Image (cartoon, rainbow, N blue to C red; front, side, top):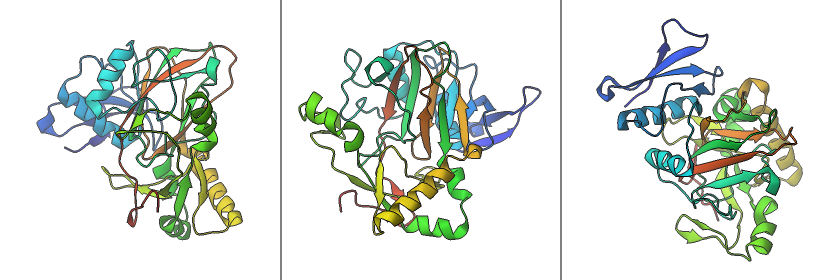
Length: 310
């Protein structure tokens, strides 16, 4: 099944339609949020989608990398069921205990330090980071708390050719200890959650390619992030810092970013294989978000698989 993107009929600026192949018998109307990343899919009810519509949503996600589905006033169980139709759902987080919510839910509660105000890609400190995240607001401040997504594919494509060639050769180390190591040791007594079939008892740094090849589209994206990438292998500390600073500055250029202002009922999906994101911490009122993630695979670089523990 392929995705076709074409101009739609009369409608708001930026409106296009994403159609599955004629055999699928379904077409989704979407409104693009940016020239490279982001689209809104109005008029859907995620509790009642057909299999063909689910397939079309997956195709749209691979194409646009971040989707907003407005008007989805769902509970945790419906949130999880929708995610399960898109793919295999993981535990909510490798180490975090979100309390009285389903195991598949990761709760980000500002009252318990649940902020995400650093650019990151979800759970890249594990050998198989999640492929997709599905997020909805539960409690929102009156103003603030927007989320921004950066397009790793557009960032890679707009690097100068010599820099792209260099990036293709590099491997980076991702380390979750800086963010979650103390929490795992002290608050969880070294007993985390089940991830990829095994209980997490430590956060061993892992190796991933600096450039990731998307398993569905074949497109390349920068796959480093300030939240979890500690350094680049095979270069000096100074060279690693300069290279990462270059990649981060380029990834988060305004032309690579789309920003979403949350409204209750929004459901946002994004592709972790080609994006990074940042939640603005510009509010003082309570903010609670619930996230479900879909199981991913080992990141593949331009030269193939990278052993995460070599």
